[in-house]
Length: 203
Image 1 (cartoon, rainbow, N blue to C red):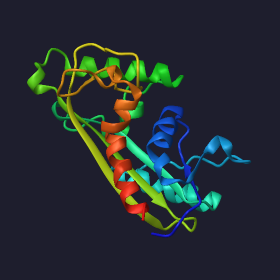
Image 2: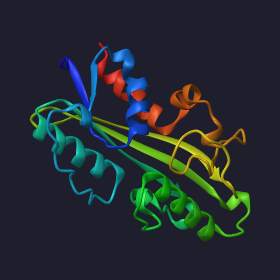
Image 3: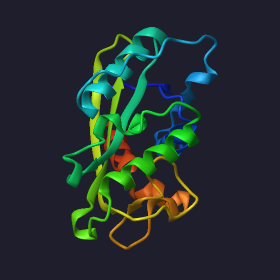
Image 4: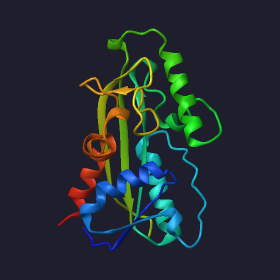
């Protein structure tokens, strides 16, 4: 793989930036975020129908706009009882505007409403993350996919994490929001995709 001195993480989500920066630290590459750049760039429209399509779309757009190697991810929740929804629409599942925290609360509430009183064995789900790294010319350097299997709980638990973390129960019974950040950064869907990225970039 070609050596890169810095890597732009193309997301406005501070939680994702923090997680990905911690995971990619062993690469020895300077990690930059969009808010560290001297100018702002238009956010590309995420109109892909898969996580892969959206991750590639974002990474290529920001790489070409900034002239930097760029990492973008698209991630979300697939619930089997809902035929894979909310999927690529996870961030705006409830259709509510407002702060990130307000949208998260509304999304979790809608998910619980749609699942109703289904028993645990019918509440299987998975977190999915696809990471794409694009070269400054917009060509795709690599893509990696990570998944974590679990179930949707009946009420939010835990104060860590974001998004659907308070509802997503791991096989040991804890929700993602009950994990210490350092543990989540080892076992999450984003961590598994990031491990694949590191294996391809490190010599």
